[in-house]
Length: 544
Image 1 (spheres, rainbow, N blue to C red):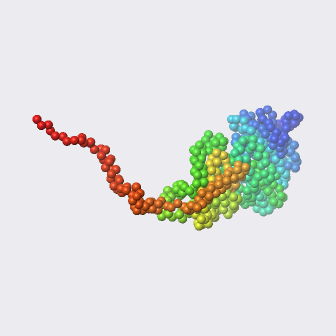
Image 2: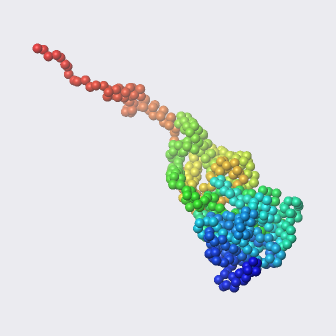
Image 3: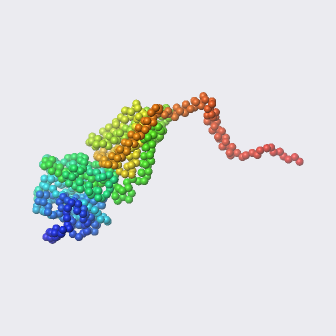
């Protein structure tokens, strides 16, 4: 059987049409083998009825193990050591790989590829070789099915995306025994290894298959990963091999892990994994249609209200009070409105207004890399710091209440436009407020890194936000120049009007009857409508 395979490979190699060059396109049709070359990407399609055998030949004698990885956008493919699919010898998913531990004198290896999807699946694959000095990704796997598992396992929900991977082992020569995983904990064991977690963002609003497979090529090999992606955190062998990130629904993200041997200064890459934090197969709310019509209508109306507040919020003080009532809740809002209506107390109103602006300022502060500091993974530290920033804003502006109100109207009103834009197209600026809500609602979100992409769309929307805020603040300051800081409260106006009517007999309203007499007269008129009408004149009997 081995002789027949070698003869087939020789015949295949003699054909001029077979190529293993970088990004070579092909369509697997079940006739023949799929040939790969070390370190070169290849595009090809898999069809359900036709499992394919893949071959890699001319393996260097300096290589001690290989990692083969295959990627697709959202349709699953299976890679296996044998035609018979077993959990311990195969993997199925969108980003899967196998480790081949090479035997002495071995220069060729083969494996099998297939898909169970109804439609053809476009794939990108590459085999990578490593030497005996390089650490072996997943070499000390005790959690997953494969004996040596280089894969990154990814899970997501609305709040967070979590990646998990198996610990690596030290490299070793061909034919030698693998180093033990847990018998030693010194510098001559796998416990000296370190793991660098990298995150790479796809272009915003790009859900194309072509774009994903193109960018995955930057996340497969160690030099490209280090040059293209952002290192989020470094784990030691004592840390748990699991990292959480904030889920970015509709935004493509690629994750990879680089295991590094600090003694030999060598490294190796795991198989990268990607996610959009949404489903392409869902009938409703899939990746292509994230926003519901009702959501878009709500945020559009909210943006129109925000623009009104941004440019005219201080002038129309009652409108701002209604918004505060909705935000603060019914009871608190009613108390707030009643206090201002009856007594004209502005301090409580301005305290709420300042807290709203403080919430935005504090959210922006933790939207920066400051929010990813390890100290803020503690809920007590995070919420105390967040609350201090929120309270600090009204304290600073308590002596300039008109300026505080105008600033709040400008920044909050213009930010509502940003939220409305996010309902139509992705923008990272919406996560300024969303990350805080996630932190409040999910007890596990404290462990998540909140990195987001900041690309061309975000810079444009940030400029629009700043322009609207500055324009609204400038317009309101110019309009209110020379006017009272705030209008008088309604009770004072009503009392002043009542006194004017009492003392001014020339005012027509002075002659208006009291309320009790007006109500009694109205009831009398209503009662007369139901009484039978009496005929006019006098009736007397006829005299004979």
